[in-house]
Image (cartoon, rainbow, N blue to C red):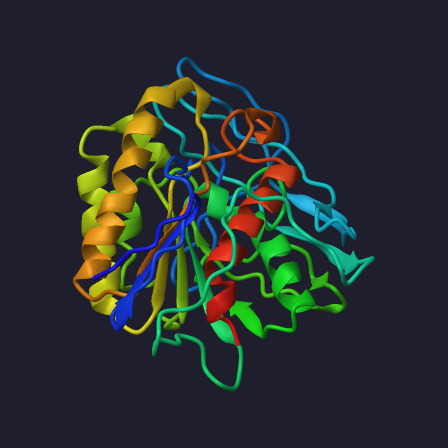
Length: 332
């Protein structure tokens, strides 16, 4: 099985091998503020203002956001977001509010900053998205997937990028909806499966229920940041088990696994964890799984961390660019 490798993304599929490079060092941080909700759509999170740090942790900013957000011609989504919550010692759990608002786009030629690789083609014979109807994308993870620090997180810019290229996509998930009401003049799908403070094992506990209740065509997984704080040892093993569960429960979906973004106060643990992820992906791809690696770490500047844990608006736009590069060839 031949493998082509570039600096940014690795693609492999059940019907052949194709590798595309995304750099190796990038993984997801679970934030200190999150809004979690039960599978029936109820939420146990609440927004708040203010924030504080505790020993060994960084306070999460984000929380409720109300107002208008605009996607500029440069592909960077602007808007307002609140701040709130605090991180207890040795953990990054918390709660955050949902946001509402509107979003418009001033240009149809916007681009997104990212550290992703260059182009490529889908694996021969594999197409996760339907010929008609939207391609269902499941954002799976913790507070970074939820979008603390910018209402809707990377999902806002990711949706904009798909819209500008005429791809029909939507987001799935059972957690409290957040993000703007509209993007590019169309309703923004505010669903996701991101719960602040959750570790890899806690995320795994949501698979298949409720995370896969509306079976996705594509899964975007950014998980492990909270493990760096609570228990970094064995995080790669736990991630591998989560990947196996996703592969077993959603065998026809494309699973995109990313390295986690920088976490300055746990840099060594993040580097060790991120280094193991491409191998986990390659092992499963070689066995026939539809799984690829996306690098969210390399090139991500700490200046785009709003609170040293969660991305700011520019950071989320950067993440969107990496995700989009990874999945663009699979979209219809």
